[in-house]
Image 1 (cartoon, helix red, strand yellow):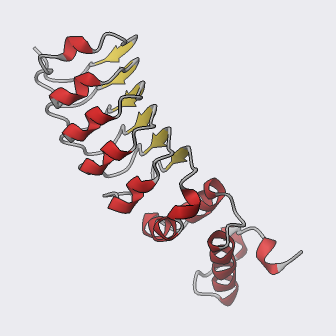
Image 2 (image 1 turned 120 degrees about the vertical axis):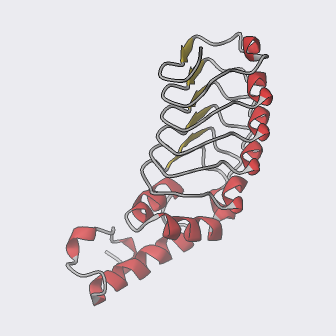
Length: 193
């Protein structure tokens, strides 16, 4: 078994500064850089080391990872998303739940292939109008945020399921009735009157 083919196991080392840990880290980085690990497996391994490390490697490997269709980064302590992240235009499912995101960059509009977007349990206060460009989106979960309003462009989506519970919404856009494909709508625990 070659040095590079060994899988990383964080329990094999007591101290992150130990020689074996550093060797494992270098081996894992080499596997990722040379494409020996599929992107999903590479990201799962990098999650153990924190979001900054994930994005450093992710951005470096973007050309190889553009074929990613599903990315699960829930509970990764993310506070913001770098612009280059939105070059992953092959994504159809993106899970950013249970992070610390306060805003979505306008570049979210580049991910036009998305059908499922999970953003619950963050700190989002508003959505960019560019979210209206995600016309393939059928499911969006925005529950447990701090949203006070929705942009009008939001109503151009063809959503089938919409989760908005536990936010601070006091009204809905006047064009909300355009969401005629909705089969499930969750609006409980808002400030709607």
